[in-house]
Length: 384
Image (tube, rainbow, N blue to C red):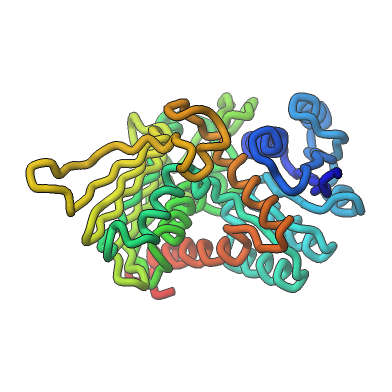
């Protein structure tokens, strides 16, 4: 008997669009899903670009107007993989049309936009998903199981860093991610948003924050030609950088955990250093996405003389997600986090459950981002 189909329309085809497209194309090849995924329409403004991407990933049709995709009665899911300044309009329209809404993070360029999106989705009564894909890393999911089972005991600290160095050259051009009107913020929304979601997922809700933002390079060359790998060639004209290059904040979480969070695009030598350390009364875990298949674990109850951090290679069949791919020790990569997240979402939809993280969780993350910005402005602690 044939399975029911989940028909998808994806808005955006570049960096995140590629990641989402690959996930839809591959998910049924590795997971025995209760629904088949149909890749109906890929939407983008550049006709040649969107057609080329559709041919590579196997989309049936293309479109240049996202409104036409929402109007298609065959499409169940509207997936938004565009820059942040377009999320609110597209997501609200999709929700009002009764579609299931999947959206890249952060869901809005401001708390007001995020609230509008979450309210529209809640009013529609339809499910939703936010692409905090790092949750679906096997080692992070393993850390979640260990913490939930009490293996780390009472949690005292979480220290999170998300560090890159890709704009450290002052002549790197003013790409859209450095424009607040398009991106909403810099490292805070792009990088720290993931650390915030990971902390909420593993440890608990935020109670109050105190932070600061900083921009090292105030102006840059305008963009000449762009590519789809977050790069571009500079022109001779210059423009103002309107987002933060680095963000740092302290946090107190509702369960008494203390947190420190740092995000930077000026961390020389760091490429995608998404790392956290969680310390508890019984043990600790450390994760670094640049070694994403490993989890470091310290057990405070090991015998004296043999205590120390050990590496767990989260590639065995009983580790979350890992058993769907290769034999033990055969590592997976960045793209698989999106496949895993989509597998979870499709399964939840087929079973009548809300996927996670959903728009309400995306809104909770946005409230933390907003609080950090307000803290920077007021130079003081802000309660959530």
